[in-house]
Length: 369
Image (cartoon, rainbow, N blue to C red; front, top):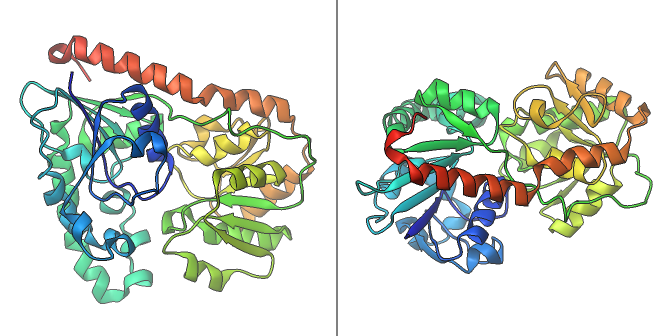
């Protein structure tokens, strides 16, 4: 059987790339198609595959501005030639769920989320505060058109799989399709506790993008008088630095080993945005540390209130500051936190996906999803 994986872009190892990594390990002969591949930015398990890229790859310096090419993405993914493949697995958070496949092949999409900026988070990405009035007016019809294309091409997928019940609801709402939930893989072997006592600081591990609401994390830690360390990079860094006080350290990109050490040292990991699933809270819990997270979205499926962390009902700095204070006072059990995280391991994900793929191939024409 000839298998192709399709992924939006390969520019770093985030949650979507962790999904692709396990699939690449399970299917070592598959080809990989992607809009843009920054060589060396993803794991060897992905890099060793045959990687095909789009015309985007040939633009000078495109790594710095590829997100601005978003309006071109639908046309670019439809140019991928997947005619020779019997099975296509797309790992999609943007446009690759809409690739064109040949009749008789099977297309399974692991949908991380329908694209946020085109559906329900336009203002966070393209609102007046970010682009000004003219820029927002220009982008509104562009994103509306992208949303229509996203909806109209949803039937190109034979079966949807997703990371949480929360995203399954979004797929139902925007695509009118059902999705099977397979929680994404977390490397609970690599992320593990150590014997050191935690230090008094809160940790954020995140891309610095608007919907993560890191402005709330900064303000909450100021109100709680708790130091904050932020690991990650992204286009929102300059704006966030203007809001931060002396208690905030922006650490930029860090290696997995360094991130693990920060998880182990932190009193708690903070997640102030609504996540579709949220791998970071599970990694923190695998290290035996509690999580303070917004009580919406994927966090409701990964954080056990009072056992592995605290869920915050109101998305305000004051509510998060109160939860941080509670978490610092509560005697959490690191072993219980760790046991909960082990439910999300990589082997479990690989086994569940392999079984799902096999069952889909056995009866593609009679599926009801």
